[in-house]
Image (cartoon, helix red, strand yellow):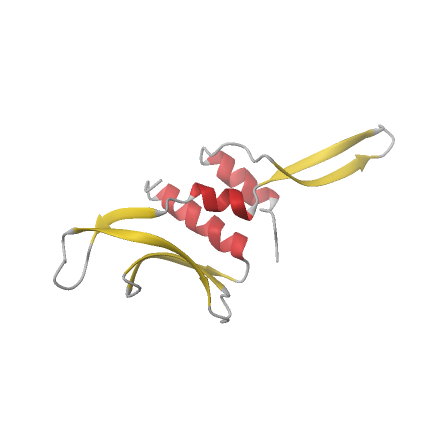
Length: 121
């Protein structure tokens, strides 16, 4: 399981306005210079903290259609090709947002980018 965002993912989140990561993903010696190169990246925990626990939005089906409802964050796995799902759902019956990926950190990244680009966060 991947523990850190890739350099491209890290750069994208910084570009979107998130604080720079505080976690050290790797430390490499700089040969001939006597120093080290430190690469920082976001962890799974840092990404979870970026996501709101709930989102308030319109309900788009059934008796409550058009009313505002609360959609809760759900992180789940069901063993399919997209092993991890990040969603905002209501009553376990409908999803407002849904992102899936083999790696948890990639699903979290995709959800954060989507919510940021849609100005939810």
